[in-house]
Image (cartoon, rainbow, N blue to C red):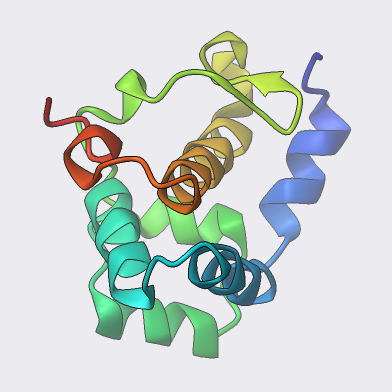
Length: 123
């Protein structure tokens, strides 16, 4: 599937706070913890729990969320298909969309029981 400018804009305007509870539910339903979720988010973005809470409270859009983030230098190693999109094929002009899909892919890997060192691209 191809990302369109409209789709990129839709995702950019969504709030992190609207999606975060779904991430928590997804990982906890599969036996993982909120702490592990936060570890994954911190690895990708540099945000600790206090930063996350602030972003949730201010209802930051994904655009603002990723503009303020310090993306991990190994984020480009996140590959594969998520929501019908091959992450590595998402064009540079749709950077926000790619970054959201990075986060979705990490949450998905966590929920699927993948080892933390693999999720965090350490091995």
